[in-house]
Image (tube, helix red, strand yellow):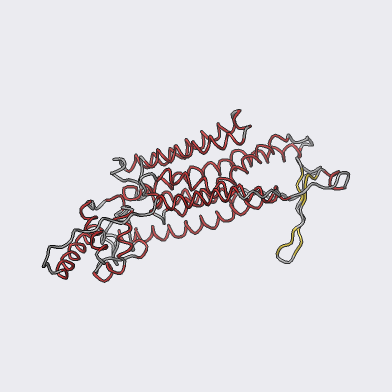
Length: 410
């Protein structure tokens, strides 16, 4: 009973923290998208106008929610510090903190099931957790050093180098952790870079500007330039991170033999599509970017499409096919009972689960047949179930399930 309520409590914690992560992520991403759009959409005032004399570098008129808005951007800072100044930071901090909590609740709390795949690397739970945490730290250090190096002044080349680095990290992680854990840690690494930009560069730079104005000094524009650079980086990181956040629902991606390459192609598509919108907001329409991005996604979908399983051997002449079907299903049910039902049942017995994952229960013949397609997809095609193959489903058992499904799942 105690173990049951611990698992049930963890599920509620998972639900509430995931909800918080989603809410704060929407707030952070929304602000990021809005301000990049605003930077690309504002237009300079007329030379000699009052706005130009005030130091306004651009303005925009917009209508929303029944009102008119007139945001203005100063090239460095206004002549006087306003009495009230809003700082956009807690959206980023809360998103990262809730995401880091999710790593502990979903992955680190049950690392043996969620992070380790013995067919990939024979790691202990602590080793897998160490790989995950180390990825976040090393990722930020490498990225920050690259931005501060001479390479940081060449945005295009910096972007290519960072993409290669992230793909290399993806390759390494997919050869150390389970596919699902590898993907989520690539996303967590990028998310750490994003929040590091806010915490270590953007907000400190903004504080320098404010402090200079408080003592009557002219703010150094270099802080604004650095903050703008990191803000733009965060904008391009966003679509790849959002895909990774939902990727755990799509085993076809992270279970592929070349899952790191699948992720690289999808991330590249996200960056290209984001670039199209950034250019469009600046008044330039280049349809080549979304076309290439969509082409990449189509190519990935075709490349990882499941192949039909080999047909089961034909029955001997005169054999009762109904009897074969019944015997085969009895064997299939035995396999599923041994390998799957300890999690996928009304009362799971596997540690860490209070309810059946995704609500899918398999403890009766009727339920097995009802979920036959999912069982086939996850045990035969993607082979990501059982989790980390902790219940040791064999290749022969997977073939048996496949043959049963191909014969009609009767």
